Image (cartoon, rainbow, N blue to C red; front, side, top):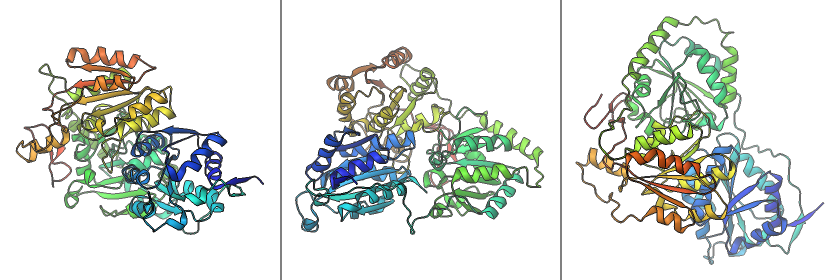
Amino acid sequence: MVKLSGAEMVIQSLIDQGVKQIFGYPGGSVLDIYDAIHTLGGIEHILVRHEQAAVHMADGYARATGDVGVVLVTSGPGATNTITGIATAYMDSVPLIILSGQVASNLIGNDAFQECDMVGISRPIVKHSFLVKDSKDIPETIKKAFYIASTGRPGPVVIDLPKDIVNPANKYNYHYPKSVTMRSYNPTIQGHKGQIKKALTTLLTAKKPVLCIGGGVIAANASDVIKKFAEKLNLPVTSTLMGISAFPGTDKHYLGMVGMHGVYEANVAMHNADVILAIGARFDDRTTNNVEKYCPKAKIIHIDIDPTSISKTIMASIPVVGDAKIVVETMLSQIDELNVTRDLDALVDWWKQIEHWRARHCLAYSHEGESIKPQEAVEVLYKLTKGDAFVATDVGQHQMFTALYYPFDKPRHFITSGGLGTMGFGLPAALGVKLAFPKKTVVCVTGDGSIQMNIQELSTALQYDLPVLVLNLNNRFLGMVKQWQDMIYAGRHSSSYMESLPDFAKIAEAYGHVGMVITKREELEPKLKQALAIKNRLVFVDVMTDATEHVYPMQVRGGAMNEMWLSKTERT
């Protein structure tokens, strides 16, 4: 049996787990592990410029591939710099492993140099955490961490590694387990047969059904079976922000995104439904608006692998705990077996009503004037990429414009921070996607506020040859903050005007990339086409957009699902 040090065990365990890349930043407490990366080989380390970006890169990689992303950072500030990234992944159920260095075991609790209680600090935002106390436990701990992170409702797991535990002077027998079992962790996968039958019977007898899908559908790789299910039952389909790309955005059954900036037909259909089948969605406040007014006529069927998400916000009439793919496959197989007479005439009438709502064309906007509309920039991007790009976004108006004006037909192609709403997520996440899919077109849609939060990762992009397209919708404001100030605070723009913005194109060039500026509408399509034609360089396109534009529809605060602003002057 081979003998390895603790540091070598960390790296060999990752290799045996099938990990190809890790993202990180070295420091004193993890130098032994970094030396093992060099001496063992077999794994690529991506050196970021800030630890938060390391987590976002691993996050983007994980969302796009479905694999577990891995991060390695040093103790103290290296570990604490990962917290925003960990919280981002936790809120959106993204599987990550964060390996954090720690001071030597005998120094823990002594306020040693670069010591912090990483397990304690991260506890509310991880699925689980480990403090390794014996070097021989490293392989099994890493195997358990991957198992926990990737099964059930996915999420981040922290492994804290004291410096003495990875000491290269001490060698131990190494064996990486093929599998692990944990008595205290056994997620329900199949779903209760009686509840599934009850849910399916209720759905089949509905006159105004709606299928609402969330990010759990993507996590479960259930897109194909849900498409079959929706087509077989001719169901209208809506999605949460995190559910975008789980169902083809151009499919006739898809109504669009629901919630605060959801489209008119999707929100109104939800409000008027008599049965809502929610799969892998957690009914957060951006999806429900006022819970007391939420879909008053609907029975809620809620399928989720996480039992704590069911009836937490919206009471489920029929709860089903289980894996989305397996449960829907079971439902699909039982449709013809159940002796249920469907009211097909009612379903035809329901679709006629939905088409009437669709005819409102709630995403129409004015093309008048010389200024570039951010909606148009996203539409041109969609046209030129033929809807086939991976698109990562930051958070703000540009995020919502992307969600509304770029239809995604393939799962895992829309990469965004939903639950935490993390500015600075987009660029590093896009780089993580590009690392996973080097031959695919990867775009980061960002804004002048968000891009500056992790702009230093332009350096990482150059070092590792990650030629993404950065589309900066530059309105010189914190756009979503300004929109709220316009609508709620009588236009008092308190600290939302970005008064001293840099020349982003020149910054990109200073980092070794291509910088472009678009100021006129007639330049938009030809210059974006030119940018997309450059395949071997990162291109930063700074688009000067109309600062007065708002994202519509927008739900009325405290209202029901069907209460929306459709423009600055029109309200439902």
